[in-house]
Image 1 (spheres, rainbow, N blue to C red):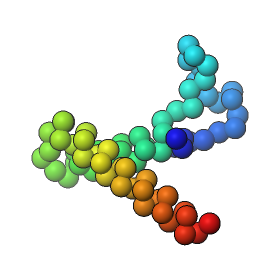
Image 2: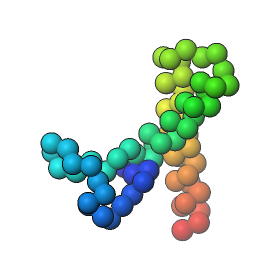
Image 3: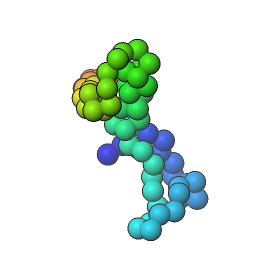
Length: 72
């Protein structure tokens, strides 16, 4: 899974019990951005916007992969 903020500098990564945490995934980052918009622009409740945010983020990842495939 792609990292939202990749680094090749292991010293910038946060240590965790099983090694080093590479941070949030790109999917998580997209979902967080969608969730911000849903919270501020709609009257959706927590369970609704959590699921919707990840559904939209997954669509964004699919579209991203298709576009990268066309460019490559």
